[in-house]
Structure formats: structure tokens, C-alpha cells
Length: 141
Image 1 (cartoon, rainbow, N blue to C red):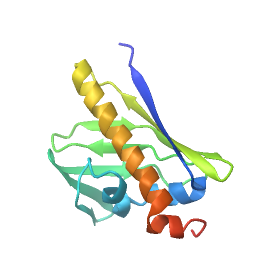
Image 2: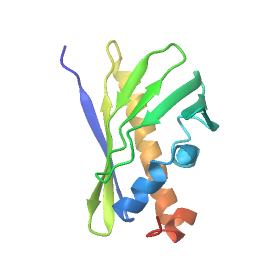
Image 3: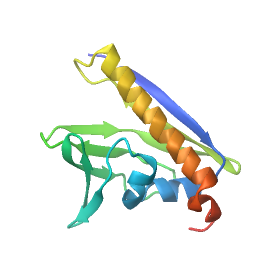
């Protein structure tokens, strides 16, 4: 069955390496993706976040020089979702791109709700990187 994807992008006035360093740190997830959850903890090398659905585990792709922030989210049911995500450099700025995939049986309303949540998280990432303490630390890795 063909998969439907929507690419949600946000341009950020921040070097790609700084955006990548910030976004790839699992402990900082609540600062820019509050819709996913609020409390993050690492237990025996595995990261967990408390969500409205319960405790969810997540894992980013290994650190890399290409800006790949792909990650898997494992729900309490054991269902695993693969989420492609990239930080793409553009001079002294970057673009963060998230590929949202429609899950089988997902209604248009559910897909739109997920799209809006991802867009909100990326807008929050932009805000944090351009105006918060992370902005003051740009260029420092």
C-alpha cells in the first residue's frame, strides 16, 4: 500500500551544526517538542518521555555529520514509529525537515492533527534557537 508523506519544514537563523547539536540532545526534547511530552529520562542508555499516552521510549540515529535526526518512537503498546528528520545547512542558517507519514487507517483529521503538532514543535525549535539561551551559545559545540 502506498504511503502518504508530508514534509514539514522550518527555516532557522542558526548554523546547522548548532541546531543539530541542540535538537539531537534527548534531554532537551521538552524545550522544543513539548507536544511530545514533558519529563525525559535516560535509564540504562535508553531514553524515555512521559506523554499523554504513557511512557514512550525514543532513540535518535547515531551522532553524524550529515544532520540526520531520524528517530524511532516506541509506544507503551510496543508499536514502533520511524520518523525521518534532517537538519540541512544553508550558509549560516539551516532548514529542519520532518517527514510525517500517514499511518494505516489514519483519518484526514488525525493526519492533520499530527501535521499541526509537528509544525508547532518545529516552530518552537526555531524560537528557542533564535532567541533563547541556545542562541547565545550558537557556534559553541
